[in-house]
Image (cartoon, rainbow, N blue to C red; front, side):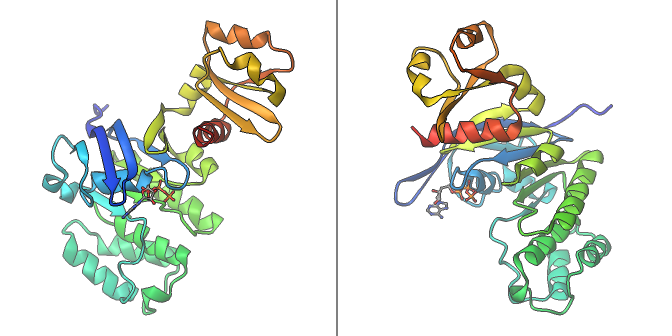
Amino acid sequence: MEIPELTLKISNLKKTYPGEVQAVRGVSLEMESQRIYALLGPNGAGKTTVLKSILGFVDYSGSVEVFGSDVDLVRNRLSFVPEEKSFYENLNVEKALRLASKISGSFDGKHARELINHYKLPPNKKIGTFSNGMKTALYISLALSTDSDLYILDEPTWGLDPILREDTLEFIREKVIVGKTVLYTSHIIPEVERIADEFFIMVNGRVRFAGTIDGIKEKYRIIHMPLKKRANIESKSAFAVAEELNRLSIIVENNEKIEEFYRIDDATISVPDLEEFFQILVRSENGK
Ligand SMILES: Nc1ncnc2c1ncn2[C@@H]1O[C@H](COP(=O)(O)OP(=O)(O)OP(=O)(O)O)[C@@H](O)[C@H]1O
């Protein structure tokens, strides 16, 4: 079996936009080859800014190494789907295909046509008139038809219907089977849960969790209790605490300290799934 390569190493990445908007506040993460990584987070968490930093599209502080180098030296090993899918507005599919083959030597026009047919994109209609889902389909067709080692996909299923979304996940999966690495963002947790090997959950410009679903299930427990019991947890260590309607939801580490929570009346303890873990983590940060 091939030894995984370190695809990406980000250390203490920070990005402040004009107007003192601190979009990314010290992100460090690593990615190995042959895996799908999902970058999750609520709106405005800083996900797109991290992807743009990796691609060298914005300036930042901290360091980003792609395949051990500056991104400019390995750009031919990367493909991406941007968040803003409006680059080809004035072209039709035929012209976009011609442009893509001029931009990248590793672009496979035949494969792109197969994907475009699969998505049933009209060849001669102006791309500016496409629906959101059609634009996504075009971008994903172009990105996945370029032979790269790292695919950076910002919401690659945005606007797609459930059937095409499923097909797209399959196309992405195929990349990893042949040894590539994928970093992608999505707001659809069940989708992410099925396809991604590892997750980064970003909230307010920071990565609050990095790991696998099995890691979440092993390392954490979720405790629900009535709101009025809040005083019972003030002195106890919790990873995240969120008020949800009339109850308190808490994420705690699954270690000997959890016994303190067993002693609270009306508290229930369960193994988290990704959706619940994500919800509590994000609500907890929003409540700070
Ligand atoms: N060009 C810009 N100028 C100023 N602020 C910006 C710019 N781009 C992003 N921001 C701000 O930076 C923060 C992070 O934005 P970013 O787009 O990275 O978040 P995101 O997690 O991708 O959000 P979403 O899920 O909504 O796409 C937000 O507060 C956003 O308003």
